[in-house]
Image 1 (cartoon, rainbow, N blue to C red):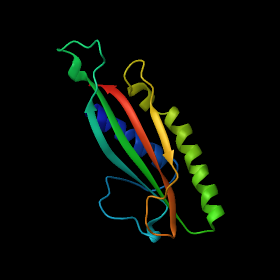
Image 2: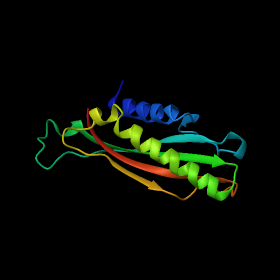
Image 3: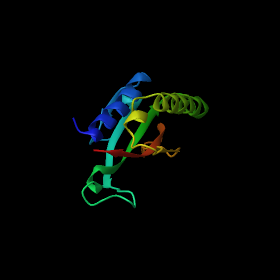
Length: 138
């Protein structure tokens, strides 16, 4: 299995470990009835060799930028905000304790950012995006 697939599988496992149904690269919108749900998007993958890389080894350095979307529904705005905060806290904790940390290129740190804008245009659904940037070697 390719390293990028291992990383994506580990992200899915983190989300499932929180107890929320999770899908990889879902193509159709999430409805209110399907929430709560995580959708993990593969995102981009690019060659990112360090400055001192030799031509024969530069193709081993990659960065993957997956995105995790959380969809929540039901409850008052304050209850959904509290639930979103709880899930974000659990995700962060699980992420930094996950096998992903051992998959990163030596000396690289993950970039992780939460955007509290709902991933849905449906006003009855709240949630957030998590943007990741993870450097690894093939």
